[in-house]
Image (cartoon, rainbow, N blue to C red):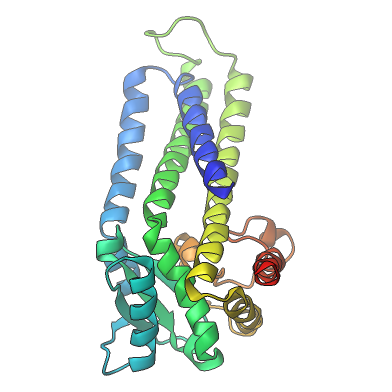
Amino acid sequence: MNQFKTFFLMAVLTIIFVAIGGMIGGKTGAYIAFFVAFLMNFISYWFCDKIVLKMYGAQPVTEQEAPELYRIVYNLSQKASIPMPRLYIIENDSPNAFATGRNPENGVVAVTTGILRILTLEELEGVLAHEISHIKHRDILIQTVAATLAGAITMLADWARFAAIFGGGRGDDDEGGGNIFTVIIFSIFAAFAAMLIQLAISRSREYLADEGGARLSGNPLYLSNALKKLHMGIARTPMEDANPSTAPMFIMNPFSGKGVLALFSTHPPIEERIKRLEDMAYRR
């Protein structure tokens, strides 16, 4: 169901992009805006592992330096039938982990020192299985494409408002005209809708990774117990220096957002994630 939801939302993003592109003066401008957004996200996708690892000062570790961590990731990658990802450790007290890499052949798993301190080996296996599932299902690619479309829509929305206010609506190569207020209202709605859809795609991929990780580890309670600890740990020690653009990569939102902020979180509600995992365990 979540797979279908992801592709449905991607289709909706595409439709919004085409619709708002039609409101801009001239097709050439729409193509340029899309190309710029695509280029930015393409570069981010191709070099995402290097960028984010450097951003957080992640250090590579060998089997000799972290034998238990290496053993767990190696066994999980064998079960998932993907190459062994590269391992990195981030010196940070906030408990968290993420996966990156443009494909399974270039997969990377990074964990903080905080998560290594508070989780048991079984709980750590649940977390790492979640990240291996992300790599196996190429979630980095899916989220990058979603970011490309959402970014392009935002750029086009800004352009449409500018054209409506200063250019009077459509260009000469399009038939008809657009009401200035209609263009402004629709462009604002489109940008907001794109953001919400991107968040929904991110949440769908988290649910899929939870399910896939639970199957890889062999026990959904490994991950559900880990999520409970991570939720409390991040509330006590949020990753204050985290970059908001990288939040979707982490297994849990690195910020301790509450109230209204939780509505715009890149991750599903922690209670729902735990409930789904526990339901999986009880159905076994």
